[in-house]
Image (cartoon, rainbow over all chains, first blue to last red; front, side, top):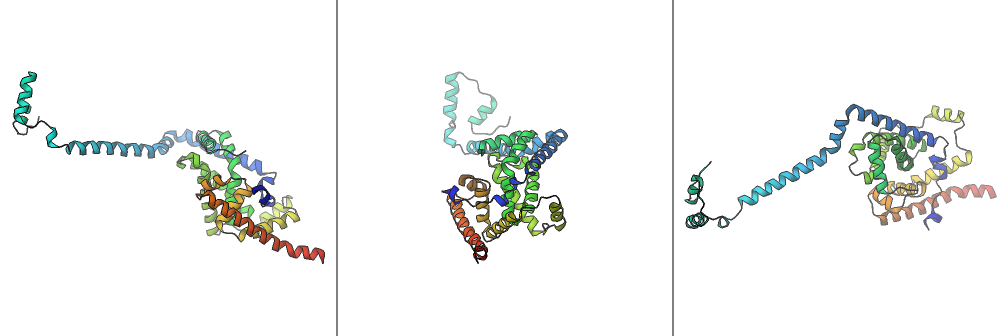
Length: 114
Length: 188
């Protein structure tokens, strides 16, 4: 149906001009020459220009993952950690572990920065 | 033969590396479409041709900024449309009498019959909306499918069909009205 109904734009078709192909070829040649010149002059900058958006996206995604990790760790319920000093000491004695000073202080409820 | 979006993307990648054959293919498959869009805006074939060539070169210079090479065609049409609108707004585009004289001297002027048909078509196009003009020119002049038009102009395929239908109908009415006095004169 489309073909039958088609408007004949022949008189406005630029490709009927014999010089059309030459002009098209000239555009391609000019563009290719300009591109090669640019690649030779500053390939590194072009690559940077081409990759800065993906690189920025990856950096933002990584930052988000790290932030979520920190957020989740800080939100870990206190009950999840062994806080009962008696249980901690029992655990050490059963495993035959020798706790360091920081761990002892931690088990006793104090803070210790190494 | 029309190119698929994947083939176009492949050509864009090759063009980015400076491959002249890729540029040539991109020009061959897109120059007339950009011309069609520019013609829709400017209404003058000679100016549309200049703008199409200019837009093509600008697009190639900015090839890095085409973030989705699969959608190169639509991106290129936007560049062509913007440049045509800028040309129209700044009144940069004018009929150049000297150029026409020169073209005539070189024998490039269209045949009288062709010129009449061109005028008729341009007048009929002028009666359409911007989108109708772009759709009918891309479809009937450059052979785009509705799917390609939809992707290129960011409209639905249904809208593309609707615009084409309305554009053709309105153009036929304009062309028929233009032909009527000629026929009457011929018979009278």
